[in-house]
Length: 405
Image (cartoon, rainbow, N blue to C red):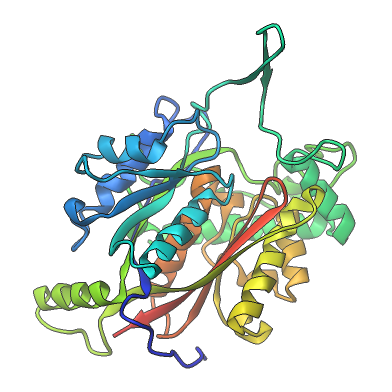
């Protein structure tokens, strides 16, 4: 049962709407669209929601990981047709960027800086610019990714780090493949049952996530070779695909959310029995660093820190809606073990192993999924947690609660 819901102040931040593009494979149907164009599509859709008028938006905060610099959020806002007075802010905490952007919007509302923000993330791996350092003589030295930790202490690529996690925490190939199979099965079933319908913004002819593969079997997954380390257990089958996508949420005050809920229900002919939906109330967030060589489990540490701050028990965490970014099955399983959780509690509609991982957008996708799941029948006061581990060994976790009037 959900724990008792303490009455929050009227200035409490609330997620009232969320939209995301169907996640597409890198090099696929979004290959000609840059990151700001993906974000603009989600922004343009979410401002069609009741009560999210463009002129009332205080700012647009967008996370992005592989872009070419500049202010992607400002460019996306203008491309979406928002008023010129909305400034735009771009956040880069790599894979945690989208979730960090949402947390920042919530913090700004807590501080009284504004009453309505759009926040989320976007990623176009397909159009990510080539990057280079300039040497002493001006020559360009190209590199595939930025450096996240000192080389002398270890700065592994994500796949190598996933192998490190699998080895260090004893996560077997069989467990990884089994979890990946479940993610695809859950995502396929969720799509078939319409669980994604209300949150999706069709774009460039894509109306559904491209990643879920309903035909996978244990035998097929067992045939995949090690992808990153010879003789390893991390394969393309139990790793997320490279993806393009965007997700944006609307964050406002509880007072404004209540007014909006009343207006919407009045337009429908009266208040729905049991109370009007408000949204995901923001409770708190924590960001924590750990060994970059084991970057995949950083979210376990940020979740522990967050639980200590909020007083949440392990039992309460087990009864929460949990969305954790599935970059690799190994890190999901190791994180679950560290938090003393059944990994089946994560991602009831599948996760990034099936849906894809558009880096800067993925944290915002987690919140989008939590809101959708809550609206399908969560009890008032149900806790919700979004968690993501990222490059350099950083974890971010955000705690919400589902509220109805």
